[in-house]
Image (cartoon, rainbow, N blue to C red):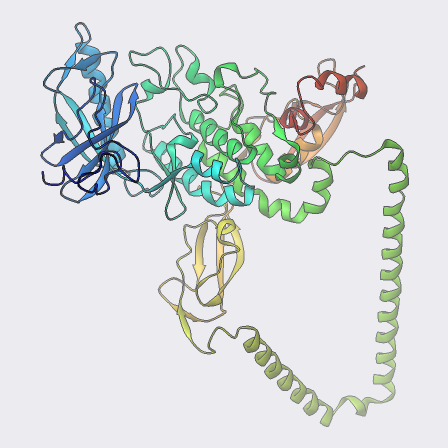
Length: 583
């Protein structure tokens, strides 16, 4: 009890005697919670000190608290659906007449939900539960307190948005944790920048867990929906959102982090998903595979949306290997190019063939020169065989030895921070994503070498095996050979109907399919848009051929008309980039 008097109930930091308010958070020394909630300094379970109210609504109230045993701040969640109960004078919860059955049902769901969360406390990307108890005719959970700022606050400090190179390592562990959460039968349904904490170690932690009934309309509890991040089906009566709603929420947060703004509110989204606007400078730098993954994950229709977080993570992490090989040729197709005068295009086109012809000519001359040298060498060997025997062999051997020792010396000089012959512990890489750690500095300057890929049910890029193994040591600068997952042996063919066929072709090829383009007459789709996709929704082996039926019918709309109609709804720095790229 002695801790009550010298702690600030707003942040749980020591409060100097005589101070009227906290110098850290500004909370008054005599601050109180609203009458409907637990009074400040209430003690629960003879251990937990209740502080200020952080959040309320839906199925619970959330308080900042203090664990008097561990001497640490905590989060306290109280089951308190204000549509079914109210606060009694003694601080207990009193059920509203006629709501007893619903209150008991939801309270049991709250306890079951909390028990499942407690079993998942090994997931470092979620704020874990470590105690569950009953008191005051209701149930409580206690969670660890996470030091740090919300992602929303961090984005504001960063100028409103981040680059993909910064977003990728931040979100990949979170997506992996969400996969485990879904496997345990839980959905968060409230993923947003306010419910994500950037902890002091720079990693994301997910908080704000509630019952599913509190994250959708048409239930007995007040819905707690988050504009821009709650999926459209969470606003629909009679719908029961599932993992695809978390896919939407995670994609919406990434969209916000990259562009500076969330998608439109889920209840107001355009039915064709053609309402996502991106600043031009972001459009020019965002990788095409990321754009495709976000477009699929932010589909309004949950049936057309990426169905699992694992699939979404795979789409965000597989393409670097593919796009690295095609970077130059894809850039001109996918990136938003700066405006150019039409009459300048014919002057630029002939330059490429000229450059190519000069390259080919130089290669031919070089090849002829090498052939002549080989012929000359063969003639000399026939005319003067003694020149290539006897002492020559010895000198050749000597030169090889000298060359080997020189190379060793050079290698030693380039790795001066490492002591030759020193052994270092081999880092544990199995389970990590190859693409996430490819550029990381490993212990002892060791280098990653990719030996191959194996089909598996693990996410694409996850390291399945390494050599040498983690139990061994290795010399500084040694190579660590790894085998990574290529994902499932079969992949689902996505329905890219309505996409520009060039974008659809690149996306399918990134998934490992071969693409056949068939031109057809179409009354429904404009020129170059995909009318239909063979085997859409089916599981096929990578390397299988998928046929795109592409419209060869040009509509009457002109470029000038299109520009005029877009002018009132867009600006020079922002446009409907997803709508233009993906149809």
